[in-house]
Image (cartoon, rainbow, N blue to C red; front, side, top):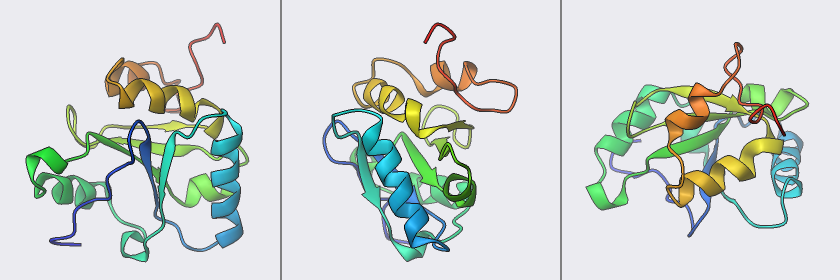
Length: 143
């Protein structure tokens, strides 16, 4: 992965990086679940086999080696769990404040998190701190 920066999202979206390439239909289903959760585009989908089973540390290292203006502050991974769990829970990864901190987010909640993070209305920690005992964000309890 060296010398290849992480793919940047399009304006006001978040990067959803595919890391599991075992099921193309599963990847399509994940994209459909995210897109169905809200009427607006919130994801920049990246399906590049160089990220197959990439470790969180490798993503942190890659981002740190990137020019400061091009760095990501977070990324959502579509990993094996995402592809096989019916709720399509993406793995959210902090690359900036607490590099390596993670939580899961079912596709249903992805648009809310992406929108708030992309405009810096909320921080990664706001969502990570609200994750349940399994490490999954499931809304604010009143939703």
